[in-house]
Length: 238
Image (cartoon, rainbow, N blue to C red; front, side, top):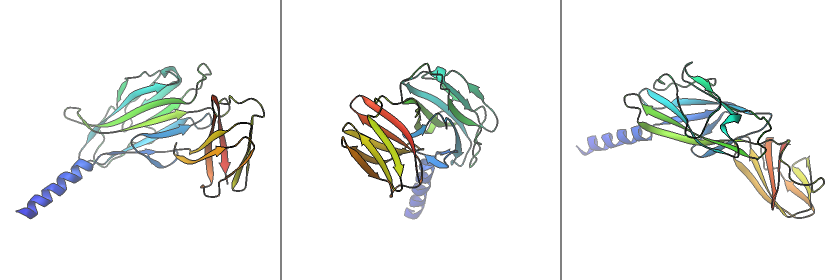
């Protein structure tokens, strides 16, 4: 009797922990709850693949939770399941979109079923621009929420975001080092293209050598902040 009770508890636990998973198609990395995906003017379209890890079919819903430093007129959002669905422009806070078909147990959407794209039109020059989305798995019988993942799509323009005066800060990359000449004390944060913070350093108002030998080769976004002065710059670590 105790053995049967334990098996039942184990099965209930497995069912409870089953949920959808979301993959960033461009970077081939998992999107977890509260993650930030950072894009720029060169890589602004992001596709998401949703996998149904439940043992039964689910519906999918995509919600616009919040929009920060911009508005929905700068976003095109496409959402569907297995070739169903539509593209929406503009979008607004509180909008809810449905996939148009159920996602079978164990199945995944294609990378073209869910994609978001910031349309940089130059009218709103405040950065970063954040779009906060929530993808939910719904019960097919009553559309109640089974599980959800909330993430931020963050757009920056590395060509436009620079409130430093000319020669206030000079940046050059070298072998295993980023050389920065700054006129100010400043905080520097390095983000990878999935929005993960990978390194933080503090600059002195002089020549600074930031060691990057412990960072994986690739493209990073460097954010420099000194009081009300701000700079975003794309760098390549080799």
